[in-house]
Length: 154
Image (cartoon, rainbow, N blue to C red; front, side, top):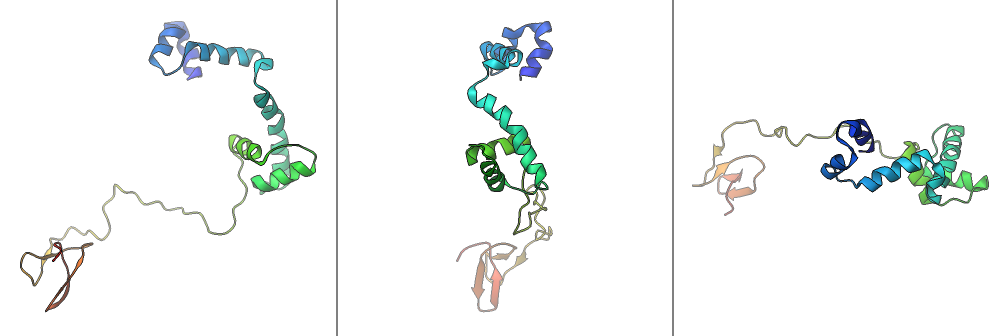
C-alpha cells in the first residue's frame, strides 16, 4: 500500500488516497521517516536487521539444509543470544526452510470445483423396493433381493 500511495500521491495527494484505503496518513508518513532515518526504527527492527545476515550465513554454511532448530542451536554455539521463535520468524521473512524428512509432501491437491470421478452422469437405476432408487455415494438398503444403494433411509 505504501508503494501505491507513493506512486499516486502526485496525482491525488496522500490524504484522499488514505481515505479510500484502510491506512492512516500518519502511518504512511511514519513509514517514510523510518526509511529515511533508520535510527527511528524500533529496537526489535534494528536487531532483526543485524541478525538476518547471520542467519543466512549459518543456513548457507550448512548446505541450506538446517531448519529453525538447528540454525538456532548453531547460532547459540557461536555466541548469539537469540530466541528460537526469533530465528523462526526471521527465517520465514527470508524465505528459508530446512529439508524435511519423513512423509513426502503432497503434490496433488484435488480441485473441489471439478466433478467427482464416481459421478459418471448416468441416471439412477431403480431399486427392488418402491420409492427407492440406486445411486452412488448414498446409504445402503438391504432388501430380500440383496443390497442396493438407496436414496431414502428406510
